[in-house]
Image (cartoon, rainbow, N blue to C red; front, side):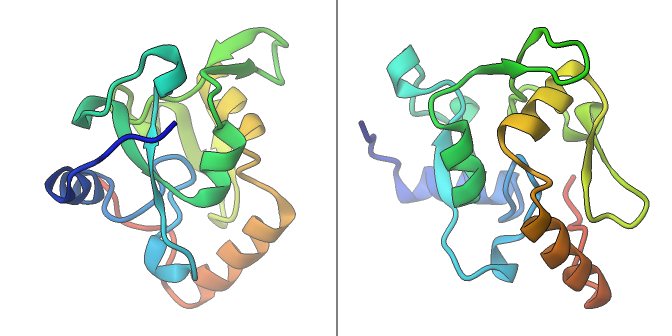
Length: 142
């Protein structure tokens, strides 16, 4: 199911997330793909197509999230909600490791999101390492 997103709303979402994935913080300009407008609460769960329920997501995070709203926290093995980029602050739930190549989940929400979206897959850590050497990572997002 898809929903029309006006170009004005698309610009608002891009500005809000500084053209970076709301989940893994990858900068779109560093990739060879176009990022997607993701319904945080999926349309299939009665999510709406408005600013408060949309974010910018890289295709990998968007595919892994799919229509999920919860995941297992690998530390507690309890079900936890996934990170909501419009209602929650990234830095409350995530941090970068010392060399900024991996995302650390600080909370059950953060850990469950990192695991479900596979945010630290080896390929991603490797490319982040290259971006760090180029001075392009991590992105500056408010």
